[in-house]
Image 1 (cartoon, rainbow, N blue to C red):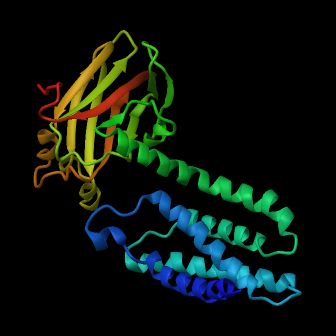
Image 2: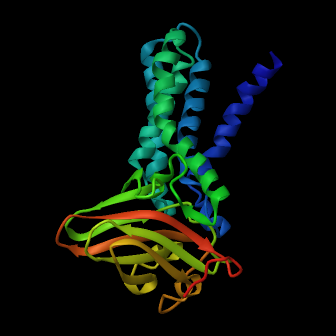
Image 3: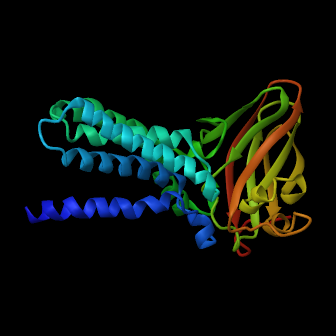
Length: 307
């Protein structure tokens, strides 16, 4: 009984303390990388599930459906107001966050309604699983990426392909899993490694093992951007760019990380906060394919060398 009373008063106090976090730019506050995006999705579902459960638990029986809907609508409007006010603090409002808020409300309500023994397995659990599957598996992959560093991609781990914007995992020529990227005709075609890039400061060379399955050469651009690049407007001169050609078969590109760091005209790239590694073609006139075999970093005393 004492624990129930503590929860009754502690939970709303905790929720009130959490609300300001929706407006704070933790990345700007700490001066370093913010929490993983996946944690934000989990937080939205959890916060509104707890808020709905607590509010409905304070209602006396019987609980009129109209009053239940009014409470849930009020909490949803609270979430919508938070999203709208975020624009005043420099953060970007998100429709996805509103959807996650709504899922959290439904999950929380299911724990308090009369038929919860049916609602929890039939509605709450499937909704929570569907909304949290990608965030939770994304966090799992981030842990795997940290353990695998300085290997950025070898496609031996579940969910690793999600780090890339395009491509699917298929068995390569030597039986190894590789990322196969279909390149369609157009101005740009390719794929981008968007996360789990790690800290490159103590590394000497970036190695990209790529395969061109066609019988003719494939022009390719390697573009590397740090976090500040986007804050500065994303200009071409403010990132690392390498224009090269992949010959038929296996190709290994070796790029000194010092060249990457000093590539921008007016500053140095922050090797601790690399945001993207893009591989793409331009003005492609026919359907082609790019295969990403392995991407890794080596140190100065590593057996691999840059040249």
